[in-house]
Length: 458
Image 1 (tube, rainbow, N blue to C red):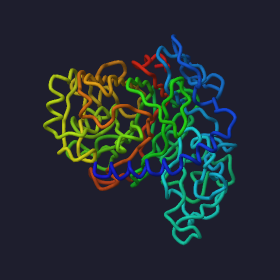
Image 2: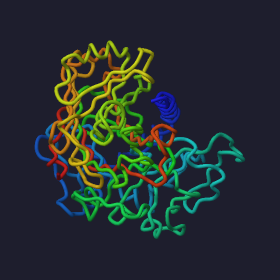
Image 3: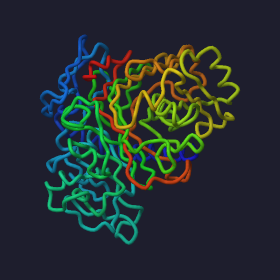
Image 4: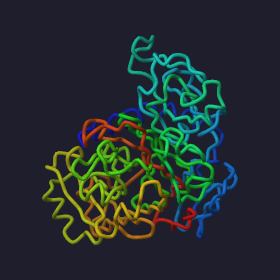
């Protein structure tokens, strides 16, 4: 947890710096793009989804084009934007923000939808890319500083065939080794690491749903980090830097891990004897002291890597371990908890939740298989917070009656995509030597209990 606060403060500071420029670009557009995020109000009924093994057409009949929810929709992402994968208007190299050269892909589909990436991913030394403009910042550059912002997407040979560069560098410039995002189509699961497989999805071939899914990529020996957010808004269609806060949130999504994510030394999750914290998507808002937290999934705290991963979750507190234990008295209905901290702040004070006998990683969630993940948090900001987490329909964590006075976050405004791997920062054994992935698809967030797994085709 030692790097949490610094990383989060830097992320929020950067978002604040970029917000006005992004608002200017979004405001100048006459309408929001609707082919990846649904913009209509949630209605009562079942969600539409592609049948097993079925493709879909971006903007026509993919999940977020057709979904109808039983509670008000807050966000939907099916990762089916064509420009997430193909070389075209809005691809990963499209546009430098307001004519500057410090943000590669400043007008890309991902940036317009999810916001900016981290700084320093692109540097002057990369040279002139095949697509887009050269980064004019970094060591030895005219502009100085650490480098340019932006997001790197690991580009498979299939994508590379669309550009002169080819292969993993097709978006350029330089090597894409540090890419934290990999949008995959059928045939891409093992494009980088031979032998990886993925089964149980409802999309084309190995794809989790539709034609494309998202893989949060942990680069070999690289920590990874934040790379954009899913912004919540009544009716869906939230865009950065909106700050719409909600206290009752339900999440339904497809989830999987690559077949090399196993509890051995050198893995992103470490071992039972030397566990490696691995951040998952983190929730928060801009007024919470930068305390974004992975309350529904993760690999930290109580439980074991071999038994409970990924249901080892984190909620930041503002209390001592003793006060947290007192607040949790009689609260845990399913699973277990652990309180840590001295009251000094979110870098050291936390409530961990984990599954117990209701779930076993080896038998219930083998790597390389797709599962339905659901989570619900309600009553935030009150004395009666309830948290429920399900795996393939089985309740694996349930806390009921928590006083939110000990919680840093009293509401959530966004979910930040994150894959920060502590093992590659020297915590949890041997650093990784090959890419490892967390796969996600068909993310549906509502204002209320989560939609059923059937809503996303599971």
